[in-house]
Length: 146
Image 1: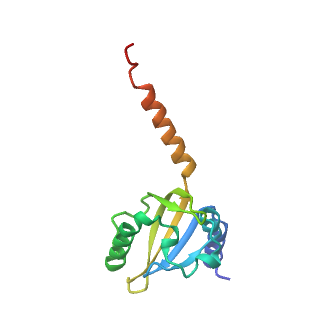
Image 2: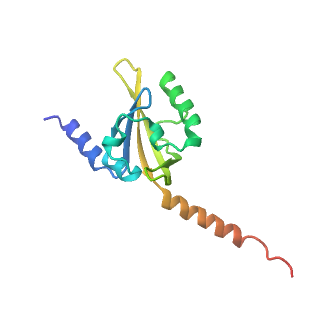
Image 3: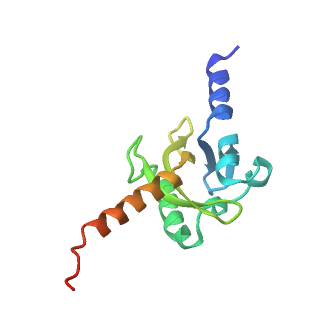
């Protein structure tokens, strides 16, 4: 029994977070139950599809520029464990706020084979912070003289 493999499988299937991995071309190869819950696509709908499935249209050029740079160089602007914040899109078209980390997937020779991301839906927290900032801005506006 390979305990490492059992642990990895258990974490992947039980994770509340989305775990998505792609090949070098950005084609989805891993889509866990957390990804199904967050993005609304079943695994059989997502596997084999481009990451464009979850990236808002206007952000795709910037995403692919960075993705291809990481694939070519094996280097990211973001260090190991850095938490990134980006918008995503659900199957129903709803925009969501995501926080995630990326992990390069390299072969034995150190060559990039793809990327894995662990993503969390932080939409409600993002909206709460935005509402608080709005209230603070309104409270700090001096009253107008009559």
